[in-house]
Image (tube, rainbow, N blue to C red; front, top):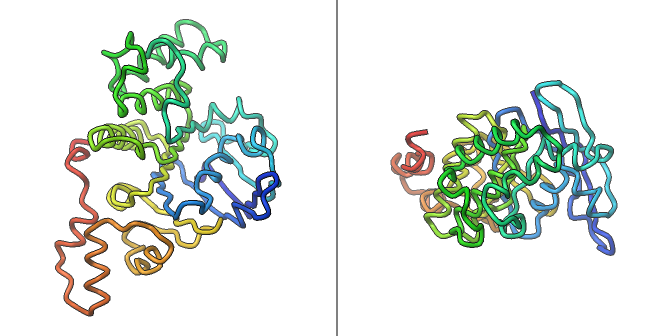
Length: 286
């Protein structure tokens, strides 16, 4: 079943002469790991903001079309145009590029509990959810830590933990590893992958680095100039590498080699594609 359905979505920011989203059509299935790639300014971040209603409720502009979120447990449908953000935030959790823009509490534990307290949940349930979110994010031993003292990867995992405590059905991450070092990136990507496989969380990951998405995503959507121009399983995009390069998508090194050999009409060793689609070592135990 689809948990997100986007139909003919167009959006233009106030005072902007052009539409950032210009006819987006996209479905996201329950439990799916969807990767979204595209050049800067293509509309990826704007699209993410429509999933939990920040656009059009908090960020105004001209909004046309439909974005429908379906609760997989109750089967109720919610229009992001009509449903308020607090309600949508319990279904769709959004993690931004810079974790520091989402973190403001004095301890890790308080940060994870903050949104739950604002929802007015019983104390017992808050404690249970905080414990679970800290456990799955690997932050149990950091609960009393002052968030600014955390590493970049730990801060991003904290931002994710705070969202997870809300028990969203869909986790949307807008380039969450852009500012991280390799170890921080590894930590965050493993957490995202674990959540998808072990907790059956539907994941939407926007990432400039297509390498991880080709190895891990169930499906990849390519966005350019506010439209989905390509969509399919990673292996189905092999025939469209020229198109990806033309719009500025950085190909994983093995795919860049594959594409160049294909351009030259030379034999392509099978090991190249094996490298493209093999999971990173840090995901092998998932």
